[in-house]
Length: 196
Image 1 (cartoon, rainbow, N blue to C red):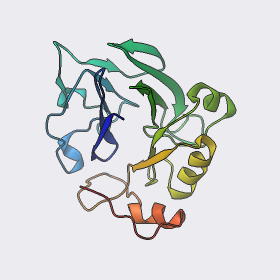
Image 2 (cartoon, helix red, strand yellow):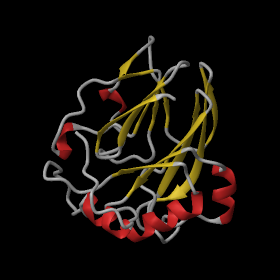
Image 3 (spheres, rainbow, N blue to C red):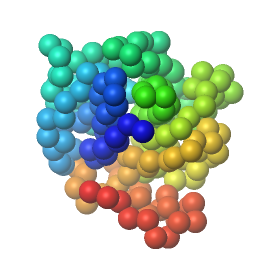
Image 4 (tube, rainbow, N blue to C red):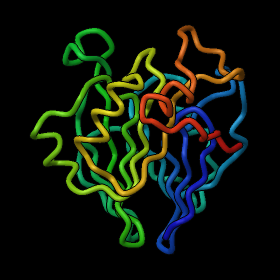
């Protein structure tokens, strides 16, 4: 199983035999620093400063391969598919597009939802396919909140769920995010604590 590191907010680093992927790196202006994680590939779900700071990632080769839209990609044996979604529940009319990334690394399928703003359509579910590990935003604000996140989890039925994009005392965003506890309470888990 690849190594997964949560770097804060919506940013994760996935390291496998074939390479390393960093999803949705952010800038220091959101309230904390991700340091200088290294990667072969960087995915950017949408063009907002709390998700698009590819410059914060140290390339493991001459240059990191940055993917910021839908399509099918293969980079050094890592298969990545970007699926067009929306950043709001008005088909992008308010906040624009979002790209969900499906990453196949070491025979494990990861799905990073970015700032998904709606439940998934049947065609989007078909494009995404089977998911082993799901990174799902749970804090609301400009993305889905705890109840919608639970519905999306039910739609995708992943083996493992990793909540991202939730409120913490460190975040300095212009909108409030629900704390992780609201999501865990929504799903009947009262004992989980975020790991730092």
